[in-house]
Length: 220
Image 1: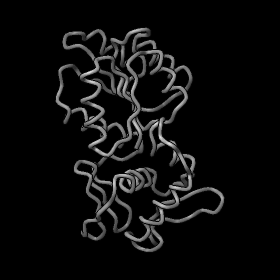
Image 2: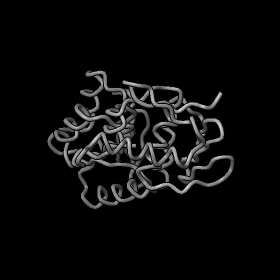
Image 3: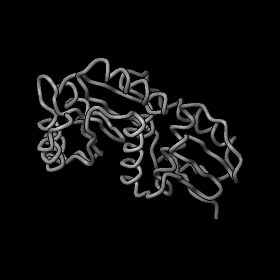
Image 4: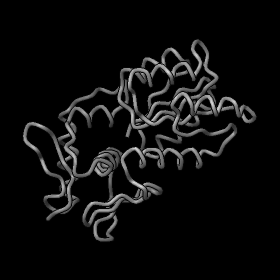
């Protein structure tokens, strides 16, 4: 799953990028409001982490711009400790949640998981489809209780399909959400990872919908 981080503090930005990538997210980052606005406007993200105190263009202006364009990705804003008015303004501008600095990275990760689940209509931290389960808290997938060994790309692909289970997902959409902006995106690699996943999952769980893409659905 692909995230956008817009944070001007270089140390915090690098810490968050490393933590998010360790948690199996693909991360694009920007250190100013203009670059962040451009990325959020033109790229597809599962969620955005947006600092409000940005150079060149402040976070509230960036957020309002995205919402005016109809961008609906969940946005977690970062605010200063005592800036309660910023929290209110951020929520009014279209933010989905906020986190006050300083914060624990574990809390940020938990809030992100909750935002992404709610956006996909999932209340539980555990995603499932038939015999397949995936616990987003610890990144473990299992079939009938048997733990699966997955690469980071396989995990991200499976998590995305589970978040959109019973829906047709195109190869283009998978490419957009699985790879960072600067990655050499090749839709043929999606077929390779789908083939690898199929070898680890029960037959028929991942369906190819000719000309449209893939669908994860429980066997009848």
